[in-house]
Amino acid sequence: MWWTAPAYLNLAIERARLEAGAEAAARVAAAEKARRQAERDRRVAEQQRQEAEARAAALQEWRRNAAARAIQAEQEWMAELQRLAGFLEHAGIDAALWRVFIQMVRSASGKTVVYGDQSPPHGNGLLVYTRPREWSDPRLAGVVCPAPEALIRWPGSLTILVPGPTWLAQIEAAPRPALQVAVLNPVTGRSDFVNVAASRQPGPIQE
Image 1 (cartoon, rainbow, N blue to C red):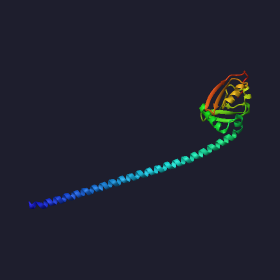
Image 2 (cartoon, rainbow, N blue to C red):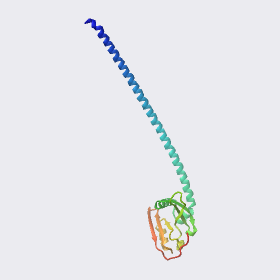
Image 3 (cartoon, helix red, strand yellow):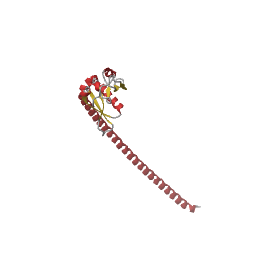
Image 4 (cartoon, rainbow, N blue to C red):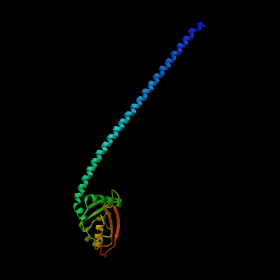
C-alpha cells in the first residue's frame, strides 16, 4: 500500500487547508459580527447620551421658565394686593387668608373669576365677575364683604360673599331683603351657602 500513501497525505493536507480556511473565515465572520455589534452598541449609547442631554436641557429650560413664571406671578400677586389694600382693610382679612379665600371662590364658582374694584353703591364691597368661557364678557356675580348698612335695598339676585361667621352675623343683624350669602371660611376651609330671610321688604335697587 505504499504507493497510496502520497494520495492520503495530499488528502490530509488538503483537508487541513480547508479546515484552516474555514476556521479563518469563521474568525473573520465572528470579528465582523462583533464589529457590527460594537457599532450598534456605540450608536445606541450615543443616541441615549444625546437623549439624556436633550432631557437635561429640556428640564433646565422648564425650571428656568417655571422660575420666571413664579417670579411674574408673585409680582402680579403683590401688585394685586397693593390694588386691594383698602378693601382688605375694610374686610379685615390678610394676604394669606385672601389667597385661600379666592381659591375657594374659584372652586365654588367653577368659572373664571375676575375681581373688580370696591363699589361705594355696594357698601364698599369688592365686585366679583365671572366668565363662563374665556372669551365671554364678564358678568357681575357677587360682592365680597359689603357694609351691612348697604343691604337695606340690596338686589336679591346678587350673591354676597363673606369670609366667615362674623360677617354673616353682621348681615343677619342688618335691615335687609332676602339674601343669598356664600360663607367661604379660609381658616377652616369650609364653604356654606346661606339663604338669609328678609327683615323687611324694601324696594330693590338697580345693579
